[in-house]
Picture 1 (cartoon, rainbow, N blue to C red):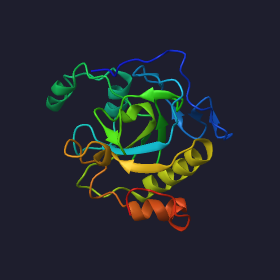
Picture 2 (cartoon, rainbow, N blue to C red):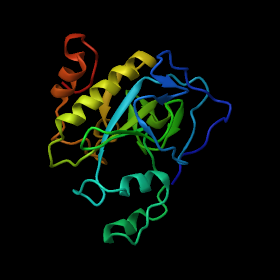
Picture 3 (cartoon, rainbow, N blue to C red):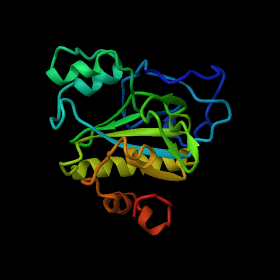
Picture 4 (cartoon, rainbow, N blue to C red):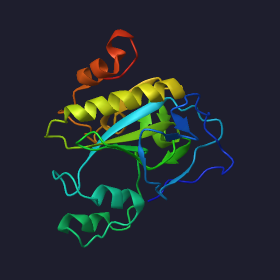
Length: 205
C-alpha cells in the first residue's frame, strides 16, 4: 500500500553539497521510480535507514530489484514473486554487490521504504529519512566494495543534509524487520566512513 500523500508544495531542506543536483547524487546511476511523493512541509531530513534486499531471496545480480522499485516486476518470473504483485515500494539508493550505486528517488522526495516505523518517538520514518538498500541478506556477509560505496555515500549525505543518525530497518521496525541483519558490520561502516573517530551518533556500535 502506498503511503499517504502530503502537501505537494512540501519541500525538504535543499542540499548544500555540490555532489547533489536537486537531491540526485552525481556519483550514482539514476533510475527514477514512480514510487515516491513529497515530504511533509518543514521536514528535517536527519535519519538514514539501512536495509538489505535480494530477489529472489538469497540470490544476487539481475534486474529484479530494479523492476520492483520501478513498478515493472513480473510476478510470474519466480514463484516467490506472487506475494509482491502490485507492491509499491522504493528506496532512495541501492548498493549492489560490486559496489555500484543506483538512485531511484531524489533525496528531497519521500521514498516508500520503511513502512510502519518509528524512531525516538517519531512515527512514519519515511517522512524524515533516506532509505539505502544493500544487495544482500541477513545470512551472507556483505562485500568490501559495498562498505566503500556506502561510506562515501554516507559522507556525502552528512555533508549535504542535517543527518544525525544512521540505523537499520530493524531499529525503526523492531519485531517486524531484521535487516540489514547480523552480517552487516557496523564497525566496518564506521571505519570506512571515518565516523569512528568523530563521535557521530550511529545507533549501532
